[in-house]
Length: 517
Image (cartoon, rainbow, N blue to C red):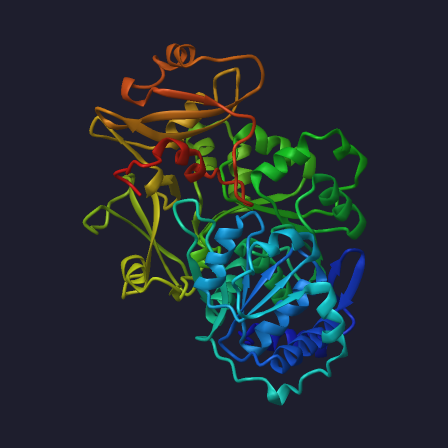
């Protein structure tokens, strides 16, 4: 069995040369063509004195040129570092320095941003469209000149979203990449060479680049979405008869709420994977009615190659086809582990907890990353010597082995000596008729150290904290009632729909220190 991405790309180019591998900006590329582009990119990188193990930074929206350069890196052992274009210039500079990048390649869209990023960068800087003429003119590198790669070699460096602190560079190996494919393949039975895969996630996140890599391993056609646009998602599904995709719940919610959804033929969709944030049963019913396909919920972190557990499509059918509360509750679970993934729940002393006890979620398997590029002490703390990754997520396993996530450990509040998990309060407050969205955070309190803060988006009208507390007082214990209410227009989220609580907390905790960081 071929396990290296470089080898599978070569294999597809020779055995399925004329099959469409990539569609980007209405241009199609066969497997033979994307392999040749990868060889030319590898040759150009070598001409620029880059070698196996070197890092290059990439800043652009999803496009074919981006793909070709990344493929060139992956077959030559050079590590691509895709930068989140939502970050500030200071954060981008941090990543470039942290990764010790020797080259910076950017898209014209970010020309103004780049000026504030590279002023102190000593490596080579290229605009992607301009350099691609050079790459296309480069003679494809002789495959015998490519370095020998193995499963333990690093393949990717992906920086975390920074929801709980500074972004950390997660080192993913070729073994991790293959383990991701191996796990996913058994959960997507309708996914194969005849499939058409819509890559909707940005490539700076594992959900974006990982989904493309999975598509190449399976030999399907991959349609590249530049950046999320609900109309464009529907248009691409309709035009290219997309069969599979990954969408964050917030993306599905937006699409399903639009009148334009009836103008496009979405009947080709066979499977939608979603994850990153919870979805309510009523919303999922709406998604079923809209897309009329199988749904699979996935839970994973960058540190586990985006893979950990799945609520399978047969679970969804069983849950939504039942009126039993115990089955309906499973929709709030993250499912059961993928093949090759083990889970345990531990307390603060590292002891394994029994079923239905809340503790920290730990994961083990070939999907677990090599570690963080920096700092080494954090590696030793989070990646245990016996192969367990300490996720920082709080949750429990029920007696059937389904994983239920409670919250991030860093998002937990400690007030009046009680552990408070925001998700519980959020589920309650979302029942308020005026609240559209809510994020619960810890805010400073002079006596208790921390108290509950509710940041909400309203459906309309006005709402005071006194009104909210009066409404919730018979639904929540007193210590879980909001001490602070803040009304905003939109909640900040990462590409998978997770609310960026860290950003919401910043204004309250300036010059103060939380007990949980």
